[in-house]
Every structure is written in structure tokens, then in C-alpha cells.
Figure (cartoon, helix red, strand yellow):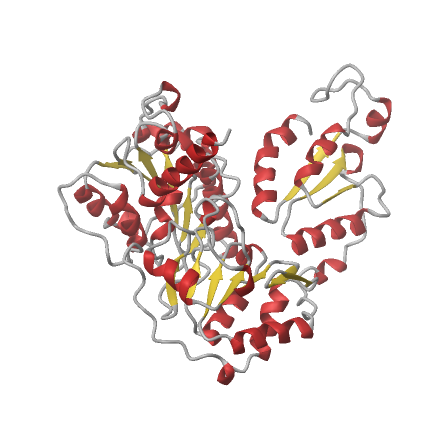
Length: 503
């Protein structure tokens, strides 16, 4: 209650913004104390409203309930859980301390939480299919809301049937398997490669945009140039067809499943053989081997992609890692986790913890596949305490790559490259595991100064088949930034100069 709620609020706000299912359970003071407005620790002011924090979180949740009526408790829990699953947004459950040990009937309705969704409207399915049949050169863009709303299997099935040029966004990476012959790369507005830009904005006559999140970083600073009369946007609860809105309360999963069931592949346009993925999107085998050279932004991201295997989870922090991974191709069946819209630095390290715990639970105690975290030295300093949780839980499949570029490189690229506010304390990352209680922490910590160093470390069995947490400190240039970030900053700066002229 109170202090804990406010500490968690930033994380919940990120989940709300990114549409990630989150259930926040809050223990509160007893109902009698609430009624009397008693001054209890964690409350606000001399006449405290014990429910004021519930009001604060109202802006970052889809639903909440108070379990202060034992007869309604199971119904209320089920209600907010259903809303969480349906909207893919956070919910809150508040439990007064005098109700914690109250007994209730075992809920039967929980079984219905994951029932197959109701079918999507047939007229809407027919409209979308007829649009696809009529197109001569359709393309598909796959974005983050597909995975957020649990529609990845349906999307992949549809793409295999359509077999038309398909692109991901930076936030939609790993939904489409990169080895598919129809996969053409990443669409980032005007920051895309020339081949991607031409295929989508010039050559196509229909753009099917699945699960879009049109945020600034995800669209190249809102630099898309798509005529509305050739775009179909499939959102979780509505579809916009050439500017006209059609409701779809059944949701995106049901709609994609309906398209898969109803499609007649013989009526689809025959698309020319796929071109190679754009040169800017370095393939998993495309990393160079200049072994004595220093590690650079242009080299490291395709090298990390090459290191990954099916079943791995890749967690990328906001900053150079996020932008650097925008235009690489990931191996099939890698789960990519990042927070590009809300972009709260420090997110990735606890997200890595959550992913590793989830892998253990889903594997019934076995940690199948690796969880690879790529974070920056500045970001890691904000939430580093969760490394202690990893050590306490005995997680074995976590590889922590800390990019040590002496501060906030992304902020240096934006403003004040030599300003002191972009500097950070110089931590000794080689001692991090030991500090948090790992008795073998020093032996499990390494650093790479050159490409050869990194190649040698990634080839170690501790990294290919890890049996304990590993830390790799990667040294990189203070002013070295990925191509996408550099061009993004230049684009925004140019717009700012134009707008200032008109003030």
C-alpha cells in the first residue's frame, strides 16, 4: 500500500502504455481503519484517505476491484482478470488486511478465462478478403499489438497462406520468423532501407497493417508516407479500412483466425519472387570478423543476432541496444522483449528477471533456452538490485551483456555530447555478481575490448549452454551510435529547426 504502489506505478504505467497484461495485487489497511481515517504509516497527511492511491493508479489500469465484500470476492476477481486478458492492460486487486484470511468458495469461472474467442464479424472478414483478392501488389506490416494480444500463432498462419512481402516494425520484431521467404525486413518510415521503403510506400497497392503501434520511435519519428486509401489497419478491437472504422469486439485473434479459415489462396495475387532482405538488415550470418578491431555499433548487433538460437529470449534496453537491433534479422522462434513506446530506462533488467522466471515456470523447473539481456551501463544502474534477485533464485540461463560506453550515449547523441549530466559513476561491473552474493561471481564475469574478445567469449560453453548467470561487459565508443538512432536524431533535429523558423 502507498509507498509500494507508488514505487510500482512507473512499471505499471509502462505496461499500460505498451499493452502488457499485468495484475497488481495491493494489500491495504483494514476496512475499519479506512473508515476512521486513522493515521497509519504509508498514508498521506493528517486526515488520510486510505484509498487515495487507488485514485492515483486509475489512469494506468483497465479495471480494479476491492475485496471488501466476501460474497462478491470471487466474482470481482474473475471480472478484473477477464478484463486484463481481453484488453491486455493492467488491473488492480485491492485486499484489506481483515479480508486476507477470509474463506471463499473455489471459483469455477476461472476455467472460462482462456476460452476460444467469439468469432469475428463475417462481413468484416469478407471485406478484408475481398480487398486482398483485388490487390495486385499487397504487403503486410506486423507490429507489436499482434503479440501483446496473443495473436502470434494466428498471424503466422495467415502470413504463410498469403505469402506476400511481409515486414516487421522495430516493436514487432520476432513475431514473423526471419527465415520465411516472404520476410523482407523492418519498416521504420523514412529510416528504412531504400528497398523496404520502395516496396511499401511506392510499389504496393494495399498495406495490411497488423497490430499497429504508431509511436515515434516505432515509425521513424512518424515519417511514414502511406496513402490512407491503400491501408487496412487491424487493431485489437477495430479495423480501419481505407479510413473507415469497423468495430471488432471479438478481437484481433478471432479476426485473424477468421481470415485463415475463410481465405481462398487460389484468388490471391501472384507476387514476384521475394528479393533478398535489404542490405541494411544484416543477416544472422553477416557479422564481420575484423578480430583485432574495437567493437562498434554497426558490428555488434548482427553478431548478437548470430549468437541467438530458437527458444532464446532477447531483452533489449532503451537506448543504443533498442535502436541497434532495429535493422537486424533475428533467428526463428526467438522472443524479443523491449519497451520502445514508454521507454523507461532500467526496464530491461527486471524484465530479464521476469522472463527467466517465466521460462523456469513454463518449463516446470527446467530452464529451457537462454535469456539474453543487452543493457547499457547507465540504464543498469537504475535497477541493478534485481541481479540480487536472480542470484537469490538461482537462475541459470541468464546472460547479462552490459554495454559500457561511459554514460548515456543516446542522450549524448540527442543533446550535450560532453555535458556532465550525460556522465555516470564508473562502476566495476566485474564485481557485480560477487557483490550480490554469487560466490563464484568473479569467475562468471568477463569483459570484451575487441571483436576477438567478444567472439572468444560467446563461443565458451558458459555462454552456449549456461549453467549459471554470466556477465559480459562490452566496451564501446562513447559517441558511437547505431545508424537508425543517428538518422532518427537528424530527422527530429531538422524538423525542430523548421518549426523554430516559424515561431
